[in-house]
Length: 108
Image (cartoon, rainbow, N blue to C red; front, top):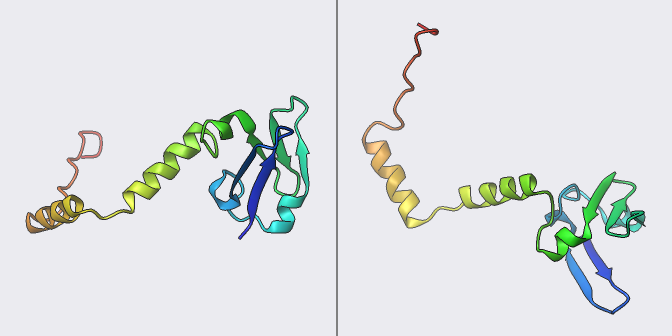
């Protein structure tokens, strides 16, 4: 598994699986070896992947942009099947499923 490990001069480290970060899902270990620090010093650029990570955002616990993180959280939570979700699906199915959308006057 490809991993990102960032070590600061203070010897503090941040490590995570590359697939968790925006733009690095399909990264191979050799793709991650060509890294540049951005001119501001606040980001890292993966040249082979044309992907950037913002270090302040990583320290806040985000592995991508807010939009990307919201999509990832929605995808992960939408794929879970809890007891309430299963019961609601059975109840809706017994009623004939999801109701049809009403046609607007423009479509009629």
